Image (cartoon, helix red, strand yellow):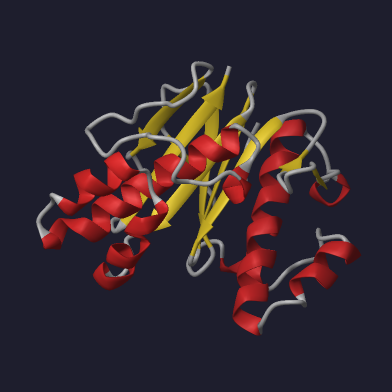
Length: 214
C-alpha cells in the first residue's frame, strides 16, 4: 500500500493508517484536479463560495486517493456514501477525514474511527465557544492563563469531535453532553470508545485526536 507521494503517512503505534496532506504545498494539485470526484460531489461543492468549495473538493480528492491506495482500487471508483448521521462511509473499510484550512488528515482503520484536526482559534473565539463544552471542561479552561486558552480549547475540541465521530453522531449530539477532559490524557465518556491525542507529524499551531469505537 503506497500513498500518493505528496502525502505524508504519520508514524503511529495506534491501529490505523494516518495520512496528512497539505493542499497549499506538496498536495496543491488536489485543489486543481478534481477528476476523481463524482458529478454529485462536484455539484455539492458548488453550493459553497469559491474558497470553501476548493477546500471541500481538495479534501474529498485526498480522501479518494487514500482509500484507493488502501483498497488497491481506482480512486474515482470508490463508493463513498453518507450514513443517517451524515458521516461518509465505505463498505470495505472504516475511515475518518478531517480538514483544517489547507490541511487534510485521513485515518483508515479496522474499527469504527473518528478523527479531527483543529487550528488554534483566535482567543476571543475560543472564549466565546466555551459555552459549547461540558461544564467541567469549561471550568478547567477558564482556570488557564489567557495565553493558553486558544491552544487548549483546540486540543479539547479535537478530542471531542474525534469522540463524536467515532460514535457516528458527529455534532448532531450536543458536544456539551460528554466530558473528555483537558488534562494530559483524554478521558472517554463511553466504555467502548478510546480517545488518543495525535502529536507526531501534526503541524505547529494545530491539534489532532483520534478515537476508536471497539
